Image (cartoon, rainbow, N blue to C red):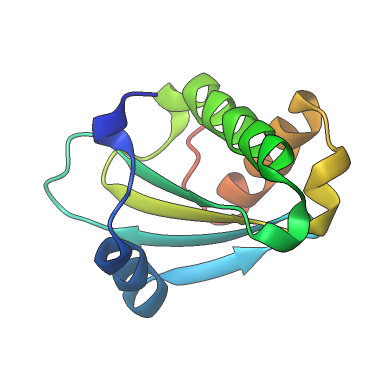
Length: 113
């Protein structure tokens, strides 16, 4: 995933939290907000220190970015998405990440089939 497609600034994260909608399952929390005129969706990933050490947190972020890259053509282009990882993610495999993320995105109709 290109760095231009990532949400990095705290203000942008807070904007999605305040103005957007949210949905969650046991592994992930999804916040999303429509942004008209955007050419590609943007993603912000947050993994707290309670989940594990830096190696574990970075592995989780890597798996989530890869899952978004695989689902690229199916995700609505005018959306800002923030994903927050929960405790069960530290034992998950890539396939489980993709399944959980697909569940959240399709439930909120961000994912086009």
